[in-house]
Image (cartoon, rainbow, N blue to C red; front, side, top):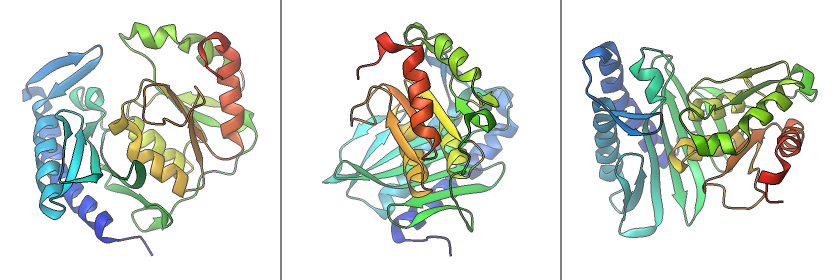
Length: 271
């Protein structure tokens, strides 16, 4: 049975409503107004419209909860212990180039802990859902991370720092070369939330990326954990949503991937 708690139901319904507008905007992408938000980072009318819908729907169902939103930032709620972490359009660059790989990402944080996540790919109609202690699902199918234990047979996801000197200074080129020598393939799909969802579904065996924001990863973290995977920061501390290098994988691959990355960039990692 797919999980459909009250919170997950609210999140799924909000994602479906926002997705209808995103799909329409995707069909008219050449007419969208676009501005540059930061290095290699764009924002469009589609982002803003989807965020507004998500905020309205989630606030209507849970009026006391706060928000951490990609476009609007922090919005305090009456209940300081609970907030939604929302990316209305993860994969904006893909979207704006007509590449059909993007998603809506919604997570619920309670008392500083990530407890539920929804990632929706509207073009494939794939709804990834997870809730702490209740498992992870893709539509009606229970998810488990892959069982691959040999790096040589693994497919690893990553994110490439584009127009981002800080990301390059972290030694990404050395990490990429080191991991490439050991695995079957590396994929840069451009949508971190879906990378983590694919890891939960066993489509990828591991993932790493520097500089992700909380809204990029929060829902995916819940999915990976509930599918039996491990998630951590290469920097080795517990502040998972802070800036750093996110590493994830199945229980066998996770420590091996982390060690490969550390061996490639030993001076940049705080042990």
